[in-house]
Figure 1 (cartoon, rainbow, N blue to C red):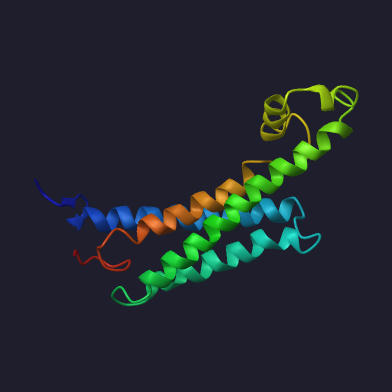
Figure 2: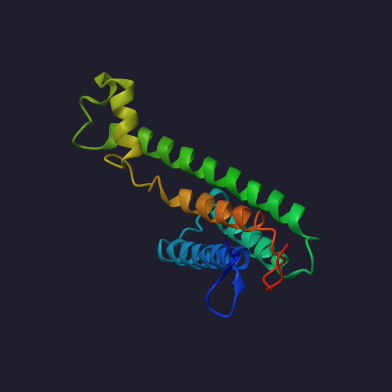
Length: 161
């Protein structure tokens, strides 16, 4: 079985790596747009995803280094962003959970609802203003970058391992 794909005989792993990096860049740009559209910069805690995006930009730029010199740093930075993403998901769920008692539909019954049901309402944004999956996009983008470092096919060039 051949390890190259059309066009021009480019090695499969190079194509996969380029695709993962392209998806990483798309994730960075779309998350930046979403954060800007939501004016997500009020207070120190809301700056965390902006910092995470900056870390992803630096890590993505490190892919341009020759050979595999930046791979370990890229992986560490991607894991840091993944941690920030997980924190963001839980923080958004907690914000929504605590907003449940303020929701007019549940104001009188919130405390009497089962914990699992209140948690479900918080996760699904039935109550509260915070989108629970939005921080997950940062994690997805970090995972794409992390996966791109596993494609041992040179940097963004065409040499195969």
